[in-house]
Length: 106
Image (cartoon, rainbow, N blue to C red; front, side, top):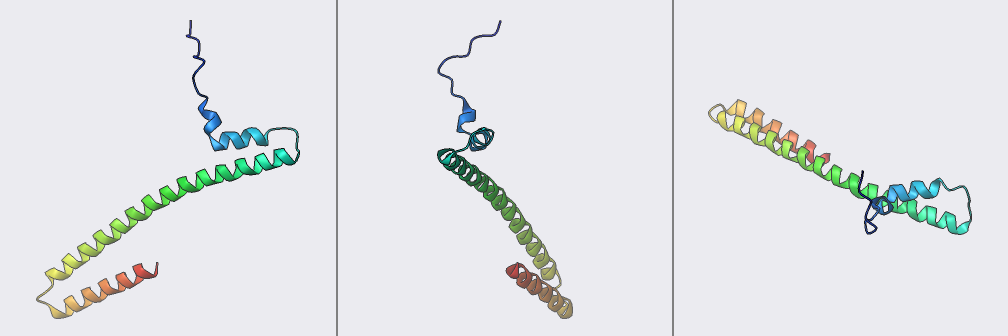
């Protein structure tokens, strides 16, 4: 036999902006107060999603920046290996400066 649910437990779904908006959107009546509550719930839901998406984009941006830094370092290392050959070294550093200019534009 399952234990009864304690009376002090909090229904976490009430704190979820998406659940609140969906609950209000499913109501069958409509008046000015209801529309205001629905708009507020929608804005709160979108604010929550904005924060989540911003966090994801920032982490992806950081990972891409790390990849670009690594590739530049690897290319620099290759250029350092061609120190004795001036034409090869010049071509290598020209490639690096082109990559750096392209990265700054993006």
